[in-house]
Image 1 (tube, one colour):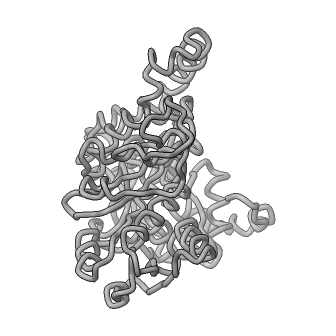
Image 2 (cartoon, rainbow, N blue to C red):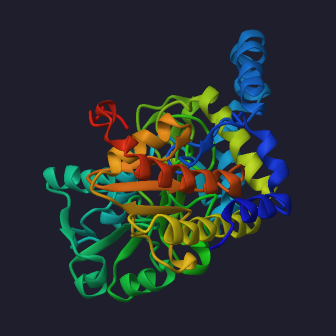
Image 3 (tube, helix red, strand yellow):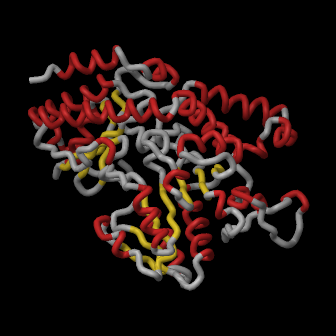
Length: 408
């Protein structure tokens, strides 16, 4: 039998990213394996927020819109995210939430495909993606169609305007072949919108190489921007002239400070802005993005795959009662592993009580996420060993673990 504790210690000792863990505020006694839900706090973030609040806002007051570069933050941070997703500068902008950006881009895509109303996705996609289609359907602007992932290509009929998929599935971690499905959609005359919320900062993404049309992604998972951090949106350069999004807020105006009664959209991705940018939360996001950019996506991906492979092998040997439902091939999955058990919720709560933080997805999935900037191999080993002990001891059967909270 493998000495997994020794192997974890060995891998941590030679980990080229080990130094980056020190950039995050993390308790060494906690194994944090939920960065795919909420990234850890960078140590530099509190000081940056204080600088924004006390200095730029408190002292600079309204002048900081220009003097501190507040007005340019959506573009500035978008440009820093661009290399992480294989985009050109000017194709990514930070704005609003994933849900709002989905609504904008679904609407824009429908307008670019007159005579077609179908938005194709898959059952079990992340709920907000499906809800946004449903909302447009309720207005008579779209028609939602769902097809199992094995049947997506055959469902791309001549009435499909847009294919909307999440690149890495939030529950199973399975990753779509972005280039293949984008080509299939284009061959059918449809556009494609990719949700990168569970991808950016942890898995390889090259939107330009895949010829993607649109994308969205969130800032609070692997980008470590904080709870509710602003999201980002991507529009391929070739579509910028035709882009027309429905939320014509003043910040998306060609010249917002002229205060015209009539809306004229800004050129480029700036049209995707709507209301006034949330400067404090954007500044926090910038700290996280700078950290990821400093490490580099190639190094992050390599570490992610090492972590997940180590954990998958250790779980298979020591905790076979929890079959892994994520793809076996690390190149076909995101930076997480998902395990099935009928008492996954109780097991997750028992792990949390032991300061091993994973998460649960209804009805029966235990997820372990691997944020490569700060997760250690010893954290992964601890999750496996604690889970084995919880199962052997029957600790998960305690009454307090059986009561499901509204938020888990």
